Image 1 (cartoon, helix red, strand yellow):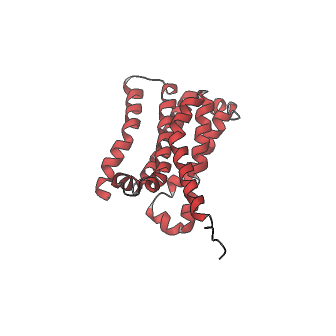
Image 2: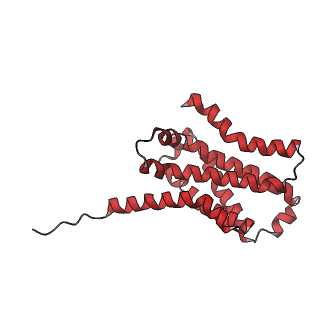
Image 3: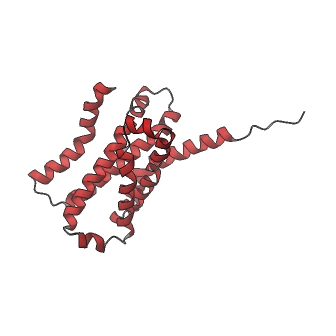
Length: 195
């Protein structure tokens, strides 16, 4: 697994490299790169959260198994894209005063909260943290779900485009509903007729 990490990270970094290249070589303003980097952050968190229900739906799939074993990379990539998104946003806003002025808007504070939920997940996405936190590590990683929900709200309100955001998040929602349905069915008591 360690041998393919550089290749996986190279693939995950391609959209970021393209954004930085366009900013440096084409002279794009940061405001033109805020949306693309935010969308890539959302896509990475969607992929990371889709893998477990996909593995349940397709238990024999080697491709899904391969991706599932590398799920943490997608989670860290989601945070790194969110960080790049934030950097371009700061460049667009230019001053802290401008940023504070719009902090109360739904599309803004949801993005900030999602970012700060992803921060501890990124910091602890390593083997040493898993060993140190034990069962608490898995509980901490569940913060990815509210972060994803807030990212969806952020996308809807910032772009004022509900349909596009819902299309992006629809596969994740469908798979999570499928997973919850399976969990509920497995916990349902089996009916036994009195004999």
